[in-house]
Length: 81
Image (cartoon, rainbow, N blue to C red; front, side):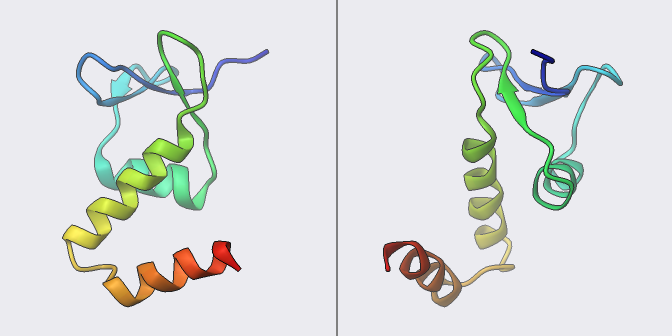
């Protein structure tokens, strides 16, 4: 199985691009994971942590005012029904 290009290191919680050998900025991560659909794996276990990263993107977008509580409620309702 091919390892994911984007890897999360628990030690510093930053995302590393294994191909380009550099850390990924928050905005670049948002583009690559949300728009381009790139997976993120935990460096130590190899487990897919893409969902965890997507939740982090949502949290950051909420803090920056890109999302509001109404949108989050709608999101939660969409998977509860």
